[in-house]
Image (cartoon, rainbow, N blue to C red; front, top):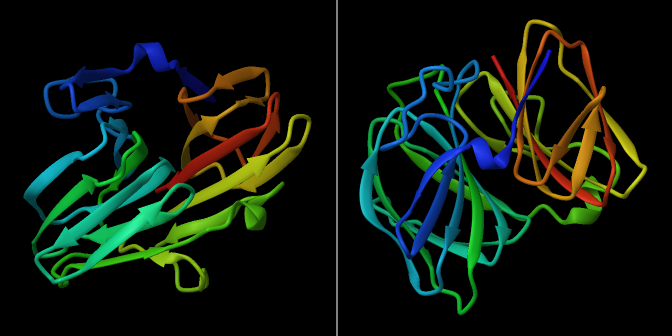
Length: 232
């Protein structure tokens, strides 16, 4: 089953410095049919103006993955971590028992991110933060695991939940498969381009909520950059 969620159907709000689109209920946007997808709770498509951002604020009991599509985001938190994550790269914050952080676009250009929240399946642990580059060449024509709750995904950023975040870049006409299993749920968003899954076309920034499929086969209609969450 594939439920297409076109970009223009998403909730959201434009705050001037932040133009936020919400794939799931978030802040002032509430849709009882879009509360979560398995343990995936939030997928925000944020456009952040230069020299602006989110001032320090608290989180707890949430796995927060930030995928930078354009520009860069600078993170600082109450643990003393500070880092700048550029386009194509990923950062993960496990909020754990509690953390305060800020996220600023300190660049002179607009920054665009996907921010993904996944409910943890382990709790009571201290908070943590990490980031790493994922050069696009490594995921050309195939899926690469960006963040994972499983020990055997050694190169991925660790998250404390039964889920994976994977990414791929496909040239027009290329296909890639992701074996997921019928008991899992997937949520796929092309950061750029357009893809086809079965007979469903998914354009850039659309969401595709996928269930009851053993293997997801994605074919690029245009050159595409894809992010997918494999959720419990």
